[in-house]
Image (cartoon, rainbow, N blue to C red; front, side):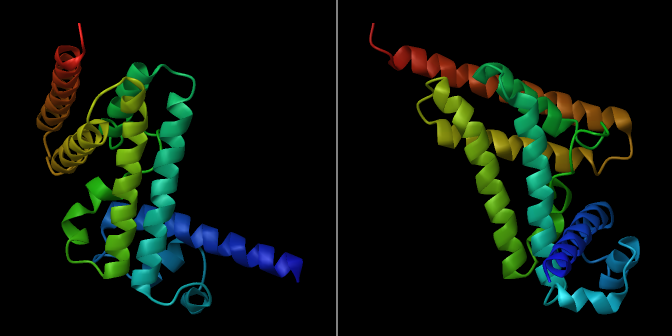
Length: 204
């Protein structure tokens, strides 16, 4: 019985990993359940032993993708000073589409156009991922004594997600790179402005 439960859990994990990759590469609407199951090397009949519907699969696979994204970011930033860690997060996130081996593609950037019309459970998974991303960056900003570290983190996340979404649309590498370069500059300016404001507000 224990082996059976372990096998079931492993199969579910395999489906989720495969689904996350396929959805992020092909889109949600362009991917059928059968596409995922074939890619996972399983029969379509096995699907309903693990998931209630395609929307259920999309939501859970998005959570799996976010786990991979944040695991990669946490591993990359562990032990680094907060300021350096923020720079690492910015660079890795902006380079995700072009640098292999740096973690999964982020659903917020690569499925953004479809999430607006997605089922509630899919939107919930996206909102959870966004909130986690904001908290992740805010945890470093807080250590640097930025006053509105949550607001600043949310603004940074918006810049990063939007830049990757736009860059991935372009067929011209130079145009995509320009979007990413400008996003880096924007985040740097936001941090500088916040630091300057904190310095002016500090008692002298």
